[in-house]
Amino acid sequence: VAAAFDMDGGRPGGIHITNSLNPYAWIMVGIIQSPDRMAGWVLDINRQWVDVDPEADEIEAGGNEDVVLTFDATGIPSEVTLTSELQFHHNGVGGQTILPVSMEVSEGEIHTTRQIHLGIGWNLVSINLQPDDEDVEAIMSELVDAGLLAMMKDGSGNFYRPAYDFNNIPGWFVDQGYQVLVTDDAVLSLTGMTVFADAPIGLEDGWQIVSYYPRQPVEATIALSGIVDHLEIAKDGRGNFYVPAWDFSNMGEMVEGQGYYLKIDTDDVIELVYRTGEEEAASAGHRSVYDEPGRLPVHAVTGGNMSLLVTTESPLQEGVEVGVYVGGELVGSGVLRDDVCGISVWGDDPFTDVVDGALSGQRLEVMIFDDSGLHAVDYNVVLGGTTYETDGFSVISLVDSAVQPSEFGIVSLYPNPFNGILRIGFHLDGSCEALLKVYDLQGREAAELFRGGLKAGLHEALWDAADFPAGVYILRLTAANRTQIRKVLLVK
Image (cartoon, rainbow, N blue to C red; front, side, top):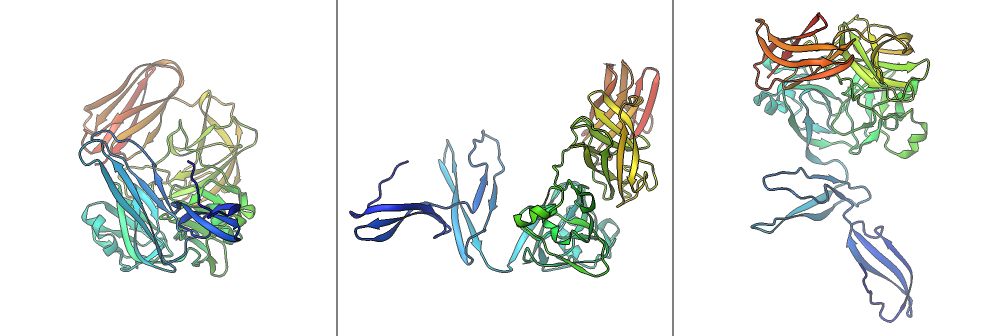
């Protein structure tokens, strides 16, 4: 696009386009000679303060599309309001709809409402404002009335169980994080006064759940770099962890709305001030990208876990997947990158009717999934132990990958309990005819999931139980004159 600008007979020079003179507009500034003067022309409104995803798209008749707006007040003066608009063009009646978009920039703390999105199961959450009403029963009332809240816990072990009309959580405090168990996806709204991103959070010796204050995502090793001398381990709600002493992190970015576990080693109370600048990057710990396994299942969040750092004594194929088992049940998985990975080993959730994770004291068995299939593997303990302990930390080194394939049987059930589709992983140690069926507790056949010939190796079957009643079911795998049964719990 070309445009002509009137110089009133003068000669232009030193042309520059900037938004530094006006943060909400792109301005072309130039020096004009004869007579000497400076002139400016507004070229376009600066809309970098709002990002729209997607910027443009087409929606078929009867369809729908989520449009996400992200606002950024960085560098914009306070006490101003910026405006823009979203345009929707319809090829039928009505033609065009325009929705106004605005952002009011204020200085200091503000009174506002923010939302936390909760996924089915356990969530580790926080909010960067102090609620007007600190009472958790009042805050959670909408979720309770909708039958969605099963459990809430704070970092001190206090809990709220609506079904039993019991609560001993003293209140919702801005500097703390909370565990929330919901039976379906939900949105929690809280209203109160915000806090500054650099407000200090007091930390004591041992474990605590803390809030995350900044609005923008920040790499965990940068955000926590101010307390690295006292930080033993940090964990997010998915069990990913950062251990400065081992120069390892797979946490990625810390984000608004999430809570975080911190284990601190200190004789005194220290303060956490989140750091957000790149100047901390050089001194931050090792950063690694979290890879979700593609062949081994990812265990459901059960509310408690231990952290396992896996290394190797000899190089393995890049991208090898590592599974951790107790009693033949998968309790954690990860992907080796540069011969290292961090695995969250999930413990049993005591609020379910089946054992769905490791129990304290159970020995951890390790298997790897490479191009030749699923194999057991030996390991040496570098730090910690060989058994599961909630909030424990162990470092192991894999020592022998040239082992025999895993034995016959069901190796993983995910998720368990489940409320829709169950993924069943099973291993065959030779080519054979296989049969996988589901029975109820009265021994009646409920479903046939697979029948046919298979080669040796790891296989997966799906059970869509949407039309089945809730309850305990029995899976029965039969192949080569051998049979294995496993229990699963379907919840509604």
